[in-house]
Image (cartoon, rainbow, N blue to C red; front, side, top):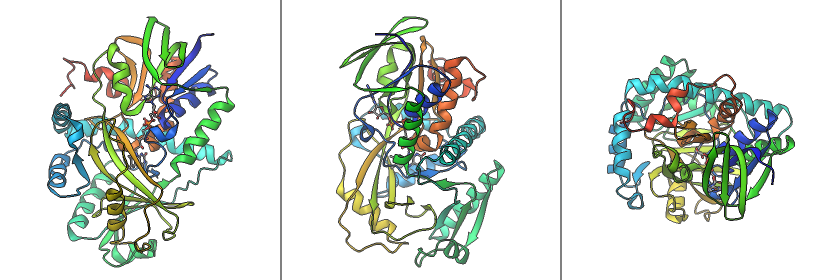
Length: 420
Ligand SMILES: Cc1cc2nc3c(=O)[nH]c(=O)nc-3n(C[C@H](O)[C@H](O)[C@H](O)COP(=O)(O)OP(=O)(O)OC[C@H]3O[C@@H](n4cnc5c(N)ncnc54)[C@H](O)[C@@H]3O)c2cc1C
């Protein structure tokens, strides 16, 4: 069989975006996906398009709010017993990364990936793709004085980094989204944000990739064998594919495939849940419910509610009906939801989370033909197509889109100044 220019491992939003960007530049591309989109975390997520989220998750104050959440039953942030002792070094690195320096380093990179994605989504929509997407603005809702105080602080941070954010009174919040019930104290409008249907985005990105000649194989990649500077054997359970370069975009499963080629990548699964309610209220806007720690998206097919960030193991995938009910119960504190609606369209996904809150994009130090594109945490869909563009620049030797030193896998090497 011929050697293809690029094999992409993983058919989530990041892998498909890489495949599309590379194919549009004339490269021959083969996507290898183990089991369809249901395997990964890209189909059932919240679908928030948030170019506002330029500040990395690892920022000052996050350790304190994480500990507060850990102490609360059903807090938004949790560590599962499935995570095992291996989670301790990750947590230690996370704590050490919650600095102003990490924020200053991360903001330009995240801004580039998020803005590029918003442009790509607009380009796809203008080209006729059915994305169920809109740049409506996003409403962050506060139902307590404490979250209002937090919101004031967040608005100041957003504005400091040039993000258009506006503090709203309770009346303004209810005018913006009449479906909200009592108990609203105020909120924040994130002017440039919006929403999309994550499954629609996956389909549209892949449609464009295959229009440009990319092909897909359903197989599980078992390992990669590097033969030379520009030759990799991709060993799958269905046979071998030869490529000049390989991009590993396998979400939380990326570290195992890349282990032979450099530092162990600290990408850990952060599990979350969603439920989609066809009979839910018709909202105008996507919402972030601050006190309930939920994200809500009015999809054409129903109201999607998502929540929780639970560090766990890659095999912890079983859907928990208790968690689904909890999502609906908490959302009902501010929204009129059908009482006792039977849980349907339940989903669980694993965010690929890094301890510094920044993705891993770049060549593995021990094998220049192996490129990583993973670790986007809670921003993978809203940064995926932008990541595709950044990786295509690496594959073709074009002008770098993001600063290699900030996102490179080499930052996790022992002895690296940034390795916490
Ligand atoms: C509850 C929840 C809400 C979220 N909300 C948002 C949001 O509003 N906006 C946003 O931008 N992001 C959101 N996210 C985060 C987003 O879902 C992820 O960042 C994103 O899906 C990661 O995409 P990925 O392509 O890196 O990984 P994945 O989607 O996990 O894809 C990886 C793929 O690799 C495949 N694979 C793994 N190993 C192999 C192998 N050996 N061989 C072949 N294939 C393999 C898997 O089958 C999988 O399909 C949310 C996540 C969750 C859980």
